[in-house]
Image 1 (cartoon, helix red, strand yellow):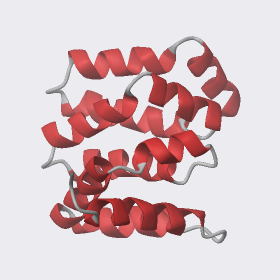
Image 2 (cartoon, one colour; image 1 turned 60 degrees about the horizontal axis):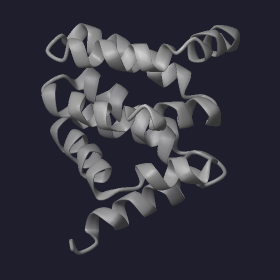
Image 3 (spheres, one colour; image 1 turned 60 degrees about the vertical axis):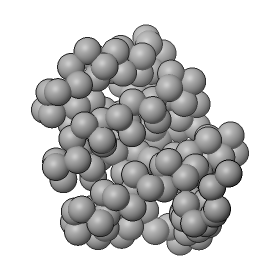
Length: 146
């Protein structure tokens, strides 16, 4: 519900979620619930900026690394990253369009076939925004490293 999302975000909920994720890194169930909540909160550009400002992408990548074997964690984390990559907020999309993020998404897709199907099918939009974002991310991943 949009009203609840606003209340949670305005009350510092994103920071609290990330704090809980940091404190309980090994708890896959907590990580999954936290990722699900973050995914729901990332429906507005304002909330996406709050997540970036709180270093949420770093926490999401850390969670993906810690719980590589959990398809559900990988699905939820990729969904958030792909939502951020398709953001209409330029600084959000640019921040997520990195080689590190691209590699994390590709690793999840290579490890868990279901991640390929669920995330790509859900986020292919009619406006082509997601396709452009993914092209940017994957071209970054293929770019020579400095």
